[in-house]
Each structure stands twice: as structure tokens, then as C-alpha cells.
Image (cartoon, rainbow, N blue to C red; front, side, top):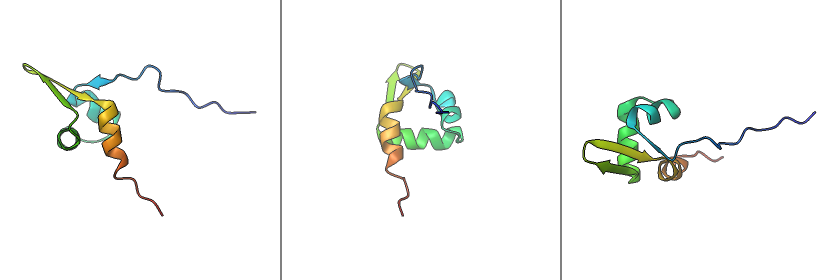
Length: 66
């Protein structure tokens, strides 16, 4: 029997710091620092959003290969 892998169809493109930290299982301060380093921050007055597509590309640069 084949096992189907769920797709990320309902995934948000932009998230706030708290939600992003939960999504990527890290503390909020680490997520904020990495999002800033990735250049994935969008600021609209006091609202700050992180572009998950840009963040994930940056995150992939830390992948360990054998």
C-alpha cells in the first residue's frame, strides 16, 4: 500500500515572528535573527511579516551533506 505525502497547500506565505518560530520549531529570537539575515522581513508600520519562501531558501544553506 502506498503512503501519500501531504502537500503544503494550506501553507501561508507570510507569517509573524511568533507563528514562524512555532512553524520551524525554534525560539522566537532565533527566528527573528535568521529572518533578518535572510532578508525575508517586510515591515508595514508596526506590523512585521516574514516571507517563508525566502526564509526557507536561506534555511537550506545550513543543510549538512555527507
